[in-house]
Image (cartoon, rainbow, N blue to C red; front, side, top):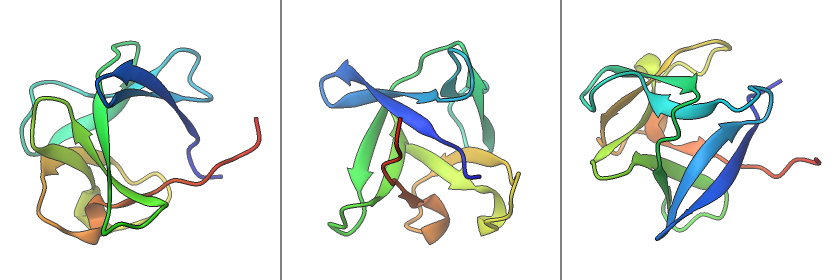
Length: 104
């Protein structure tokens, strides 16, 4: 099953991204904001901006607040368990994420 997340309003157009299975764990960068920093689940509640991709209704870039870094799929390989990192926005599809509603 794909990872399931809940977006929590953090104000000013930003969200916190909470893992539905993670018991209070949120998406965050594991260290300083720079290319190659791993994205992990943590109790640290970083904020993100969700930006529509090409005007589509369910595809987005996930941008770390106060930076130009986005969530990036390792080497663009959509395999189960593949790590994700933050990286400069390079326009690649490996930096585009699909959001789908699920039942609570």
